[in-house]
Image 1 (tube, rainbow, N blue to C red):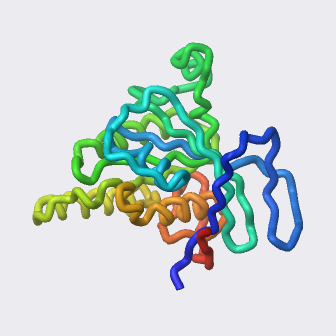
Image 2 (image 1 turned 180 degrees about the vertical axis):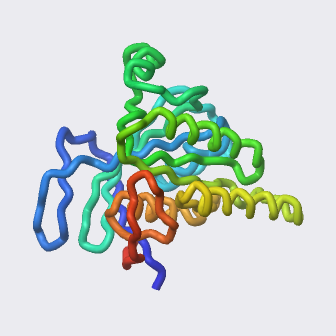
Amino acid sequence: MQNQIIVKIITTAIRKTATRSTLEGDKEAWKPLKVAFLGYSGVGKTQILQQFFKHDFSATHVRTTKPYRYRGCLVCDTVIRELIVLDVPPQKKFPIDNIAEWNHNNSNPLGLRSMHVYVLVFDMGNLDTFQYCRSIREQILSSFTHRNFSIMVVGNKIDLVVDSPTYTQELKDISALVRKHWRSDYVECSAKYNYKLNDVFREIMGISGGCSGTGTGVEFSQSSRHRSKCNIL
């Protein structure tokens, strides 16, 4: 049986505290897992999140001009993990330090430097958008010296992939670069058809240690992990 994640969407206001608990009843204080979705304009970051959290998809592109937060409770095995996802407007530069982040956002920082997972999204129908992922990844890596975090890459709009040998090879090259050289998790999906969006969030849970995913892992904060059984609600 394919491993999945139980996901219960929480639409109430964000609570001041969060807990990480097991279904057996044991509880311990635990901060929410914070995830940032970044990518070039039009790659479908918002569509992925709207489809996953609200079961809604709009074919009309509306440029993201301000950050938007989504909240969910993910359950894998017997572990419940609170999730906060930030839909980030296209950023020209990743803040090199806390002062830069504060100044760039007019004293209202996005909190990008405190994220646990960075999800870099590109448009599989427009491979030029992958260059943004490459650039922002390099900026993220160069801005930290001693901090654990993870990076994964998501190719959205798989339904727009052109059926040609050259295009197929380019996608294979991207997959090999991300998985083998960057050692990051990589998922191809379609927000429009709700295709493999669950896999995206299963990998996020695997990266965080909440459950096991299918990817190779990320050198910045992960160790080897085994695939476990999860379900989705």
